[in-house]
Length: 580
Image (cartoon, rainbow, N blue to C red; front, side, top):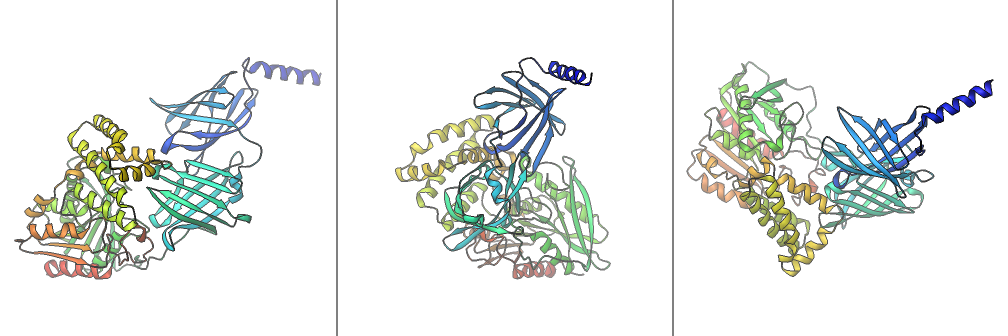
């Protein structure tokens, strides 16, 4: 009877299976998405009495595992749903000789997927399991430090991510991964980067070439215990001789919420105060970049000298709402106005002595607000441009390219193409039509260039991931933020601003070259009642003592913000707005 019962159960299980359905049991490996969003993944199918079930493993910054829901299998089709967060992802594919291929639908958007039955044995790259510390080199010069981590993942696969500690970036997911014998290929298409190299016998070292943005670098990795760490001797450490308050305030114009930190000197006050304004991009309240926290260092230095300091997360960062890419300079000026109002209402702040310190793009925002508001007592510009965004972009691209050894043909070709693209952006307000116009121009751009430029750029554009990188870059140029800075002319605000002003520049700054902005600023402020302009010959864009000014140096330099610049800024403020 027991054997008969078992046979009956087996028959019932068989009847539960859809007629004609294939048995997909086991692991399938492949990819999800395309271009910059491409990720390696694995599906584990399990066949049981209730039908087929399973799990999807996506290897991104970490292994993300989700259950398969409502799996439907026939001889030629497979469909299932994956719930990640509140948005379901619908998978629908066909089975063929190449495996399982289909589309993922999320709302109305679709992406491709492709899987094949897993080959026997573990993924070859698992031989590299562990952390690898390395760097890019130009000749004998270290350009930037890198890290590579290989972690075992489900289905005998590997999760592989890269770190760039010099740029404060961790766990960058791969879009391409191959290892055959001692040859290794890694691709990060969203930054236009790829590594091709060899694995040393005994898997003790990885050596090869990194290609990115038309440049090639030697790249070497060695096994390490953990990621690279850097000394930051200026980083403030508690206990602090001042009070610190976490604050929240809102831009009344659009109700955007901001979260920040206010540091207040010891004593009864009232004290002079400043609002720190970050540069381009989505920055946190410390303006963290390349392993440095310059706004934390500035706030600590000023507060110890008797000046209250408010620093806040940008739109869309940390505790702040909104979106950086959808905000214009006028929006940012409104954000800073709200910060000024918060300070002026604080019982330990002198409402008549509230000023602004803006770095880079923040050097536009400060004068813009000061030209419109009587509430601003003074302005300090740190590498603040005195020319339009378009002019800055041309100058910084050329300066960085020349310092990096990029050929004249590539530099000139890029400048020609940039001028044409910027003209389309400025003339076409509709983003869809502007994108179509830029893509149409790029399709024929190389043919219109001189032969040397055409040949040089053609080799650059053929690099792996270059098309995806270009597409991503074009999308950024059509955001409200970029459209605004491209055409913004700061001269009117700089000329109208009559409060005391200090403009500091680094002589090695390649992002806001002082040779471009200083003469313009001197002319605009020729009749200003209290304006000071100073260039520190050996400082870079971050106001570090540097050798070349290239961004690759930022993280390698232990200094966060040169003491001579901190002291000049502090003394300038205190002479005018110090204790009363």
